[in-house]
View (tube, rainbow, N blue to C red):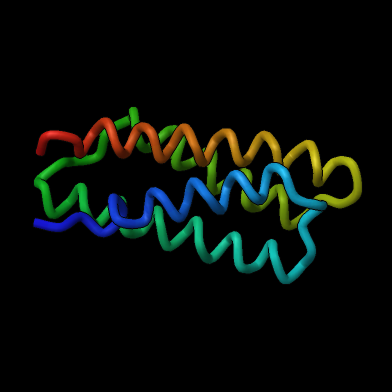
Length: 106
């Protein structure tokens, strides 16, 4: 069984690296980032359900944090946006790692 989010991991990590090292997010790039992160999260959740995995705090807690971070980015500006973007990228990377550990070997 091919897992959707596993296939997305490499591209997501590349995107996060460029987001971290790039200039401040524009409204358009933030919108695209939000879509990409939500798509990854939806795929990860679908994968885990297909594998018979039920809700797990090890995934749910960082997932909630990522979603709150997306909301914070949408409201931020200037230096706050740069700081929040770096913290958000770290949270998304941790979430991707948690997902990867959970589905590995299944």
